[in-house]
Length: 556
Image (cartoon, rainbow, N blue to C red; front, side, top):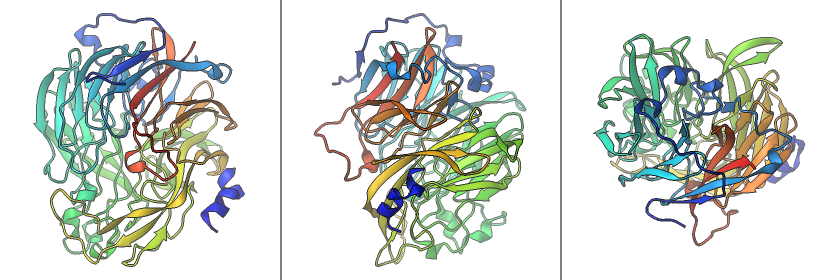
């Protein structure tokens, strides 16, 4: 079956200054003085973030990773009245992949080159900005900041962890926290966490380095100093369980980076991570074996002085296509076979959606959401076709579970590529360590929004798009699902039927998740959009200039 046949079948269709510019569309002001204590959340507020409709304090709403809000002001009856309340134009180039953080009336956004803007969440008025112009190893991307103890924290493209005063944006401290700045950097937002066992605060952040010849780790840092508290390495060394899944010394540059977010169950002191692909990406002959813990979800016990492994589930052993599970694990309670069950979900860039038992890692269900071809054929020296492409399948922006429908909402893409391997892979500091070339796109390049029934693993509905649908999923307690299309259109779906109830063209390409919050008692929806960057495909127009927007919507 060709891609076009598959798409036709029932399987596929079931203006700026250095400080930025606000385009306000008249919703009044909300300026008020904030005490130092009210600038950042308390441990109790973080712990209860899922039930707070006003604030969006963590990258994926709460420690569960579920992009779900209890807000109900915007609903299927009035969503057609959504209009832009304000727009902010950020003075930077590159794609916008940020998860805005909103707390007590202030929104914090970042751009591809680690610029930070603190904005009034009701009006878009700029409070302060920060720009440190980091060195870029290979590509520019930043997905957000952390708030803690009166400070704003960011991980940078040159491997720094930086603390700023949350009220002024002035730098408090700046520390290099990666082991090797030639191959390691940060793109994920740091995650604040209060450890009840040691009664100490920490910043959790994973490193992006797998495609550059480094090994992944998840680390906890002291928010007052930037000193490391503990570190857990994703590649098992000599004498550790799983080390024998790497041939020879290939484990030393094995990848399995931790770039996509942290999920925590405070009740059981369990941290869930989805780990990156093995390296070199496309040349498996030099790293024979299953290559643990690449392309795996791991559950770590974080109740002690250092994390210990509870269980792992490897989705794709010996991956040769860069098909790692891209989005942050989502912890939720769903109905399976008539009973309530604690589950954890993942999606990978091969287009697989996985549901596991949260306590054991046992596979509960597996649903294929994207067109797949050549999944068991490693890239050859002559070249071959495989689908999805490295930016196809399910991407990092995340998904959402809705307890009212028992559906999990997750976008997916259909992209194919022509892959080529090289005879060998040689590590050179600061260069890609991939054992081949990134695949050349073979179109068409399309996408879906999927509603997967957690009980059956079958689609309750699907909506097909002529472009990739990278924008993640936001589910609301009022019965809506929001998501942004790569072409720049933000859509609102009826959660039960999949019918599109509202759409808006943001004017730039969407690769960021959608969020909801409240300011002055009014509900808003926010999404960022910008350049296509690595997601550029032939179907996209090529305007002479592309601005970076944050667009905020409200019902007038």
